[in-house]
Image 1 (cartoon, rainbow, N blue to C red):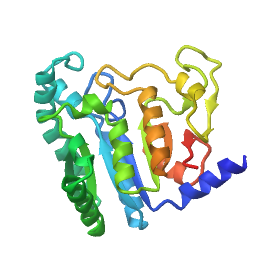
Image 2: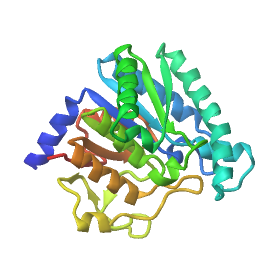
Image 3: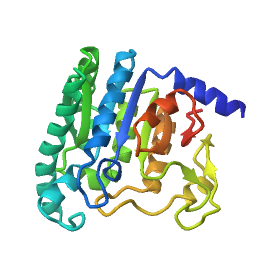
Length: 268
């Protein structure tokens, strides 16, 4: 109990926060974009910035949105089709974000990343400097994988690991991953009605990793397993992490305020 209280206090005081939203959160089951959710997400993130917090948004959804526009019935399997869908979907997704954030007078910037941007050297330094400058000017960086020229999202599993890498690069205090499952459970809650929520994880053990479920929705590739991997990376970088239900972005504020929801992964 004491560890949970300490973890919640650290979360409450978190200044630099990375928020990750996945395809299954941003879209309906048919692949269409959930405009109501993005509008509410824009309001919540702007509110946090107005409070003096530094927010970075890592978003999936480009391939899903593009695939829907191309009338795919499910996520494309061929790499060239994924990259074409990403090129179409990324433009649409960013335009939607800008339209909603503009309503709240919040500037945004798009950052598309590949794995090379995290390797030690000039590119990593330049990437970090770009983020820091945008944050300094009160701009919200909106991050996605540069899928049109790389297979980064495939490698990074629906951007779960990408969000952890961004959090580590920027020495964030907290990463919040919004997903279609509200917490980590001791067994698959979709198959076991008696599954129990795990509210706090001090360290990812083999037992914790073993309870990870299957991948996500038709238009996404992420699952609980990828979130556990992200938690392990956050632990190594000293970043707190939380998993929570993404169906209502107010959940972000609830987590920061210490409400007993989701799963907290400690960094000690």
